[in-house]
Length: 496
Image (cartoon, rainbow, N blue to C red; front, side, top):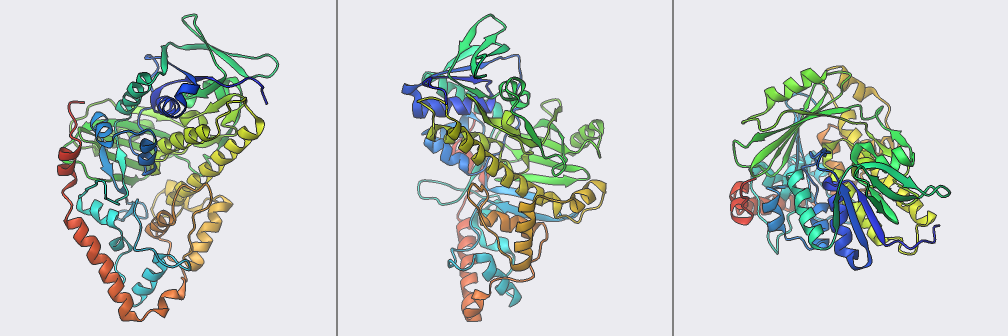
């Protein structure tokens, strides 16, 4: 443990990661810290993390961000989940919603066990019939307010989001320094970072450094050599093209993820435009072919040139090494299928705030931080692999995904669900039981058995209960305005 008290925090890099960190630190610990962010306008950011999950709402509440103002300034729309198209086979479609399926059941069995019993009796319908968020998304409707319980996230413009957080941060006392980092200085004995030396000749000294330099990982890897665990043998997509198009219709309240022969394509509707991208494995699809495939698929006027992003899926072996903590892409990357990138930044900075090393950087703190980050990343990894592994699509890419060995932790989940429809949410596990259930069923895994508790209910009572849930959801959805109309009244965006 270093005995040097930590007051000076230096954030290397801006973008979403840097400004999320700056905004959170200055809001929660500002009077006790001196926060400096170093970035260069000449260095671009990846800037395609345009889809979030509901944890973003809680993070914004922590920062007392007004939802309407945030949405207006980032041209945001609402998101109720993700529509997965062609993932099991061409023409297939299922929805991973953010909501609760059915109503809370007993401690003995989750709702989907009752649904399996109802379906066996011939009146269960579709599992999605019992989820408000899913039905609202399918109908293109949305409403929220002080008393609303609908679970939602956001589609947002990542560049505008960083700009919005920058204004909040600088207004609260964060110092921004423009410039490129020429070298990173270290203590010759401990290896701890001491300063960032800029090309301008300026030196930015600090006690704690946050690496938000993206895939370059300038501090955590190029300087400290923390190491990288490559997961490419499980998630073999390694490239993406991103492009923006003008909106041709009102935004729908969900993301579309559309499988193709060597990966998938996203469509993220904002108020003023649509974010599009094509994720692919370069072993099975050339960049030129992928670029053309994306251009052929998009709708509306193309606003930007397709931008190629190459990446490795995996995790830094240490995201906290000595007095450096990696956030965002510098800490590792899991492809954007379930929109977890911004969440991982937000949860990491929240953990840092909870265990901030005011009295000096300690080994136990770093080890605990690394363990939590590793466990969460591994479980998100398993959830992503699940989408690829359970498929019945044609083609060599999908055949390899189907036949590959998967992590033991995922093998266990698949066996539990396949045997008895059992799903669970572990400690440090981001995705809830309802998420696992929707994707497991959606990808075509039919369990051989399930909990028999529902058989204790008379069939007519079970039928009436299910009919009541469907009726309540249908009435609630019918009372909602169209998503586009709600945006216009709640948070109308101006010019981008």
